[in-house]
Amino acid sequence: MPLTAFGLPMWVCLGYLFVLGTVVGSFLNVCIYRIPTKDRFWESLYAVIYPKSRCPRCLNAIPPWANIPILGWLMLRGRCFHCKGRISPRYPLIEFLNGALWVLVYWMEVPAGFGVSMLDSAANGPFGPTGDPASWWLSPVALIHWRYFYHMVLIEALLVASFIDLDLWIIPDGSTLPAMAVGFLGAGAIGHVYLTPVWHQNMRFARELEFWLDRSSPGLSDWIFLKGALPDWIAQWPHLHGLVASLAGFLVAGGVVWLVRIVGHWALGREAMGFGDVVLMAMVGSFLGWQAGVIIFFMAPMFALLVVAATFIFHRQRELPFGPYLSLATLAVILFWKQIWTSVEPIFGSGPLLILSAFIMTVAFAVVMRLIRRLFEFLGISSGDDDSPDDWNSGDHLFYYSSEAVDPHQGRWRNHEWPGSDSAHGWSQYDTWKNGPPGLR
Image 1 (spheres, rainbow, N blue to C red):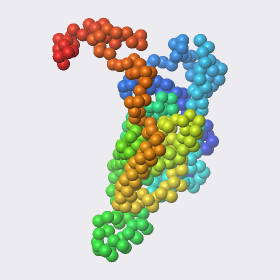
Image 2: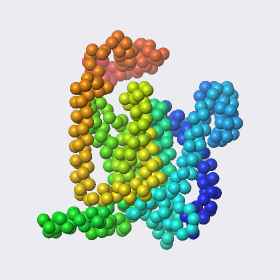
Image 3: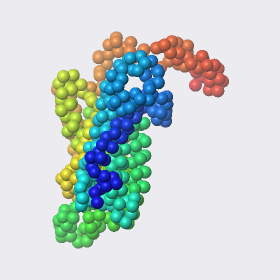
Image 4: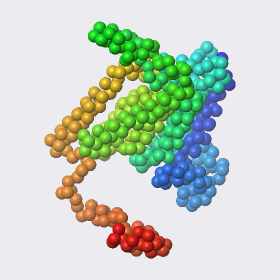
């Protein structure tokens, strides 16, 4: 029996998923536009559903037929139905892109034809889940579709976060935290959506090390290495393992970026990565596990390298949003996990030596970054973060005072707003009675 949904031909499934993907893409457009408009987490989520879709210029409601993905924009010829204002072509392009992603991921993750198994999926490595034919909701057909939709939740969140990061250089919590919750819940409830177990050891590597350890300290290897490739508790407690794998991915993937952020700031004297990237990678880890999170972190710079070079040459721009490249690396890992894992499995299966290697790499990274900073100082190149007082000019002075925080007790106009809102609403006397005069606090 084929592994496609209900045994349908692959082309039928792909056609349906493309339409579904464009519909979801229309909702993603709303998320991309509205989530950054609010600073608070719950307010940003509420902004996604209220108010209803309307033109940002004339504020008239958009007709239902105009909300049809791609076709609605074409029928309107890229203009508002009421005021004829221009509608960006990015909206239908995102809808089309999302539909194409739904098709691509399904085509790669769900093997077509008869006589196939979950092991033929691009998202299955040697230690991936195989399903339970005796259970209808964890059968190979059901499980491979559970994992597909599980991964699509992650990809949709990455799409929203990436476009917001490209536009505003921020990654709001509203674009990552809801999906992160799905990552934890799905991993624990289903238990078989992981790419690879939370821990394993390469048996060939383990046997070689056991030989040398037993020669110097007999019996020491029994305390260090497993008897098999996987711990026994993984098969005994699959749902617990799924949750542990998700938590480990959350901690390691987010922790790696956080560590680079701290070490990079110490070594270079400037922010190396934003905190939004930390949350983004923690979300990725909650879905894909800690091994995939580490791989993604080291793959992302390769996607960004050409863009960084072009940006620096033509615009002399030192920074760029890193979220989109983390997202591209995540998509590549999902689509080509089998090939990637085959190449790196001996490294992640090296047991305790993996921890030692990670420590050595962290120290080496800090030393190299520090040397780069010293080289920049020797060559007279600014680190780009801390300007000397000599660089302060009159424009900086005016900008500083134009953005100063005004005492809410003082009535002063600024940017057509009334900062003395406490006085205007009658709260200044209450504040003085409760907290004392401002000068005595």
